[in-house]
Image 1 (cartoon, rainbow, N blue to C red):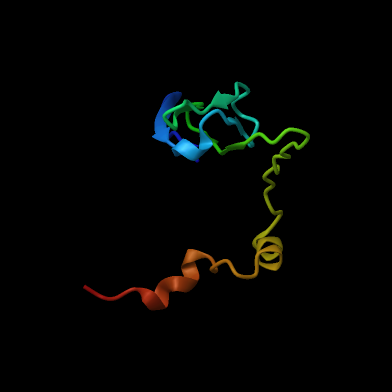
Image 2 (cartoon, rainbow, N blue to C red):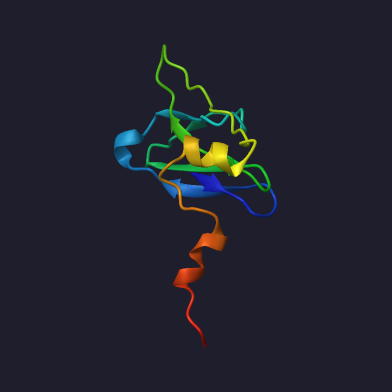
Length: 99
């Protein structure tokens, strides 16, 4: 995962010698150019500004399908869809301590 909270850029990482020659793609679909892992296991992974890219090996005959994010219509929808997520911050008042 490569993330940017500013301008577009890249992160150079060592993925490991066992991945040399592999082609990796951004499965989010944000960055179209594939990345080839170099013979020494290193590669540069690009990311657009204020975005994120998730890279994984491109396997011949297989494709990745990016999941589109959606916004629930109400908190109730969110709670029903994600029952394990914490409640809104207002309900955390009991965790606050007085100074």
